[in-house]
Length: 155
Length: 123
Image (cartoon, rainbow over all chains, first blue to last red; front, side):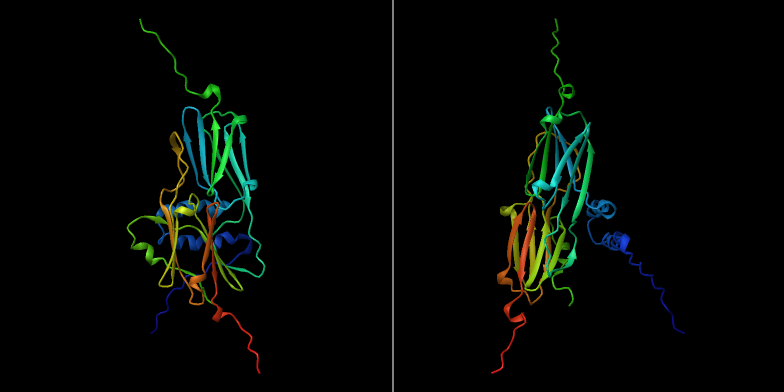
């Protein structure tokens, strides 16, 4: 008697949902890659590119540091609506005449990333710099949001 | 043709320092390959590229912008980048060139002259 092994059915390739086909690869890579990198890539699976964002605050400013490798300055858009900071933009693909991508992990296309800031900021004084693929946005806190030192005279 | 620039993952496992694998793209052109590797926070001085035993290793050490204040939300990872690719014998290792621009390393891996199709004239 011969024993036929159960064969896992292959996921169908569905052009309009092609991100799903990478789901299996992502699940496979779960066992190969460090745990956190898989978590970080989950955002990419469903919503395109979700760049990593760090937020700092000090007495005067809220500072957002976003990893955006390979962008052009003019393709980055920063907007502020009340306490929500939104970074959006588009990464354009290089011209590819007669070239074929053998393996692509880099995300090409539009992205959008929002975060709620811990305090109100002065929208007119926001500044940003882009260096080595890292965008740093400095948002000065609104006057009323700054911590105030109150002098109390003790007799 | 099968995969010609292949990633070699086993190498990463024996390293004691923790690295993360950066995202990469391989593009094939008529005269070679172009490899793009995303390494945000890495500049020219902190990038090391080496070829040894037909393996291309790219190590990028980050220099993140120094921000005054307390970190209140973090998504970035502190580790440096490292990734190894196995080179196809058709690639001329002496002619590999690299540049880095806004955190993306672009490597040009030309095919060796003897591999390119050549027209032989019959006398």
